[in-house]
Length: 44
Image 1 (tube, helix red, strand yellow):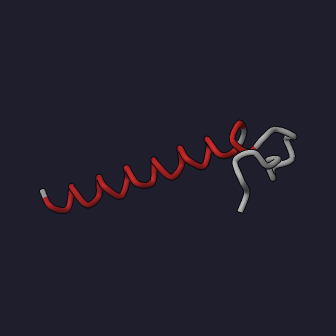
Image 2 (cartoon, helix red, strand yellow; image 1 turned 90 degrees about the horizontal axis):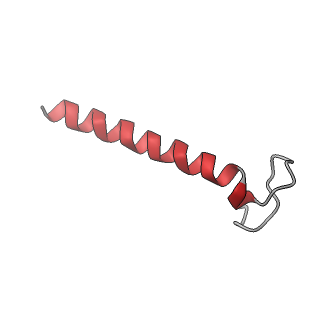
């Protein structure tokens, strides 16, 4: 597991928190949002 202050594994030279961590958080939030929409749509 990569820590927030570790170098980003993508090789950019930036800290993980300033590089790919934000991208991963956004993609996880998007997946959760899509799943919730599917659940709500199945009820109504």
